[in-house]
Image (cartoon, rainbow over all chains, first blue to last red; front, side, top):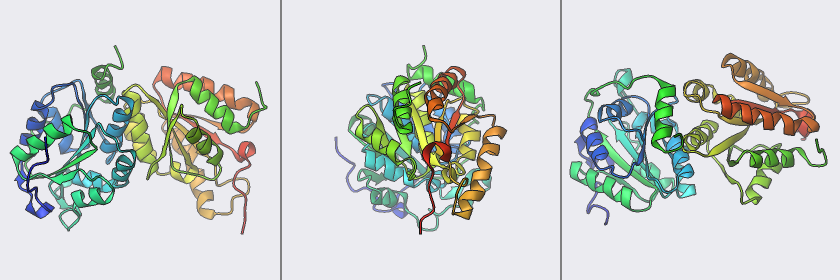
Length: 204
Length: 174
């Protein structure tokens, strides 16, 4: 497998997709009990709406920590692929974590950034990606050489499949629209953790 | 309790006994001997993170994946953690282990450290997080050993505070 040809060279050239649609496409490609960590907000809500999986962790609060949590799972279970789903506002709070992932060369981790350029859940205020910050370029600067903008839905599916097959770390940048999420994650932290740990085989 | 070992050797030994093999940290001068020790020992996976809450997140993920970790930091670093403790460790019932080198007291020369240090125990108390201040070499093993057992059994975070009485602290130098 190879990277899709002619990926967008910048955020501005990437197609604006729908978060729920690509989240469903991603979940449909998971065949080996891969772990998925959903960051705070609508990224998380649409992961919940895309179908409950015991290997999904729905983070509530602790904005910016989806990538570190995903990295921790990846460190604990090096044979399991882990996807950290994060929004643009969230990753902007924790850019250092990209450098940490790069420094560790965490092979079984893929980071998917859902970038709509807005703090959508708080009223759509612009984030810094709408002002020119390019998360893929930042990730490359942090040392994540396998960082790429997604051209369209089929390229997204190719990239997810590639990241599940080949060594990472990966960072897949996705521009998304401002559609409302399809559902709301149930806010029950101990239950979410318990199911996740059972899904990972840590609790029996 | 054997006291022929230095505090950092005792800490590393107890961490091993409890299979705490992941050490994330934001460095501190007082913690240096422990950081050097865990880097030198292949039992441990030790690395610096860019920010303390990042380490808390990594250790939380590792715990849920079946691996135990501890986060090392200094007092001012702890002050960056309350949101992550209140929204991740406490509500999700994750036994986040923390070891804080206490600045801001007994000879502090930096006023910022002095002020931020005063926020640490009130934050821990408000969040009902178990914490112990380590002052005497002969208590270190007992406190950490029992507290890790309790943190795991009760699925609750625990914070160890390294007092200058134990470590000597960081002294004023021009």
